[in-house]
Amino acid sequence: MAGDQVTLLDFWASPFGMRVRIALAEKGVKYEYSEQDLRNKSALLLQMNPVHKKIPVLVHNGKPVCESLIIVQYIDEVWKDKAPLLPSDPYQRAQSRFWADFVDKKIYDLSRKIWTTKGEDLEAAKKDFIDCLKLLEGELGDKPYFGGETIGYVDIAFVPFYVWFHAYETVGNFKVEAECPKLIAYCKRCLQKESVSKSLQDPQKVYDFVVMLRKNFGIE
Image (cartoon, rainbow, N blue to C red; front, side, top):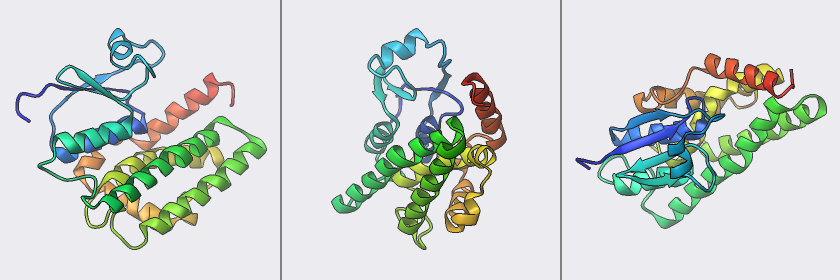
């Protein structure tokens, strides 16, 4: 919408922030990017998200919207004249929300355990992580994207984690592609879209960031 002021409060490595970046790119929305220091949170971030004090926050004409999946739904509803992200059918919409919620509850929690644990805990997290990826791979099936022929809500929820895979694999000494080749092929297909490739970060840069975090947490 012409004349809108859109600002994204974000942190470069956040897969949750990357979701919002992809959604805005798909819709062709121009916005101001505001990088946040999560160790020294800005007055603006605390003002715009006083409850969770987390990124990402989308500020649209002065009004904040928080939590990445809620932001993506908001973007889809506000800029609805281009590139629909959620299906129009109520049942399909519910299914999309289910799988996006699955990514939040399972993929994020398990992947975090991979780089924050060692020994038996790490091995258990790796197994559970691959099991969840296989469920996602089964849901994807032979479709180009989770929602069918075009990129949509579940893709936006999941594919930002792909740039963290290199870090998970290096820390955990395993290869996702060996277990889930179709899912990796799908991720690479998503990256062929400019809206995705320009919104995601370099996996090596993310790995270096994870190494630093592990040292800070005393895991290394």
